[in-house]
Image (cartoon, rainbow, N blue to C red; front, side):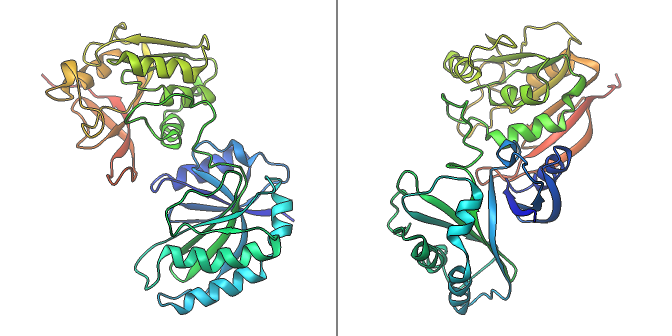
Length: 345
């Protein structure tokens, strides 16, 4: 029997996660919810290889009839009591765990809190496992090696599921160095997927930061030449460390308003411009992003694509092929797939 799995995702890129599951033949997609893709996993599939997903879980129970009032807590507790927690933990192949921790979330207004959901479910899951339950009410971090369960509620349906890995998928092993404003890896992976990198020989990120976008791009275009520039030398040191010194990458100090590459030489440009929230624009971008977009247009080859995370309107000089609205840090930027447009003089 196929395992029922759930991929968690940044809101907005759920369809891209579903596409990755299908293309990678990881399973058959059965449904898409807020921040979730439900699928039947193919036997032997490497679910931990999902790049656009934040996390991947093994479903333990789907519970219908979950209302907005506190009677839902009793219903959830009964459902958790019926879960074969030990059997599921064994089937997952994950760590045995030293404790049980539960993280809960829901869509819409409820008369109970996430902490009440976690405690109602966690106590029941921990009992047959003979493990202590760690409550998040006091704000303390779960102990290292705790078995991580998740409860999500949308409409009147709840999901109880077990994380397959020791840590969420978005915590990439390569990311040993970081900087302020670094891009969330699954979003970077989504940008790379939208860029259609299969035939790209050169990929540029003019605001590369800690290198996340280009490192995610390499997973789809292992033969491409990857160029990353940034105004900040500390960011470039982080990028080089994360890339592990691989020869496919070239890092350099440059102003994104004056990119040191020849015109028309880049097949793809992936860019997350400085938002001005955690990382203020510097150099030629201090007064606006106009110089960046002029440079992106200049360096793109005739049939090249730019994939950009944009917070305002799409910059002048580009034709939009596709946009994907996402939720990040309380904001709602769009991933825009752009081609050079002919400008009238």
